[in-house]
Image 1 (tube, rainbow, N blue to C red):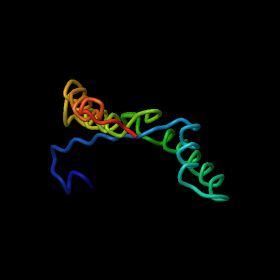
Image 2: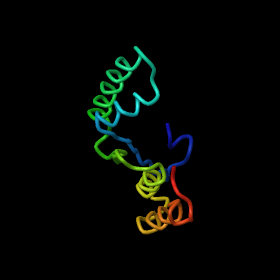
Image 3: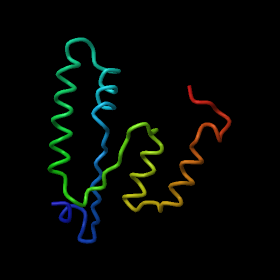
Length: 105
């Protein structure tokens, strides 16, 4: 399907963002209200296990626990081959608020 739409020299990189059960529960608690939380945590854990079991072996797994968006994004784009690991490190540094004279709040 993808080759038909995008051409024969297509390179597909599957990326699966992961988080521990504790991190997942913490993130959901920050955005879900009341009685929905318990059900959302159960659903999320079930789906995470399913993804873990069914994702292709060549899928790149990127852990998101305790990491910022820029750091995660840099790892994803390096895994996709859009930039090399060294450039990814440079990009992380250039987007670090502390290096730009700003503080994260």
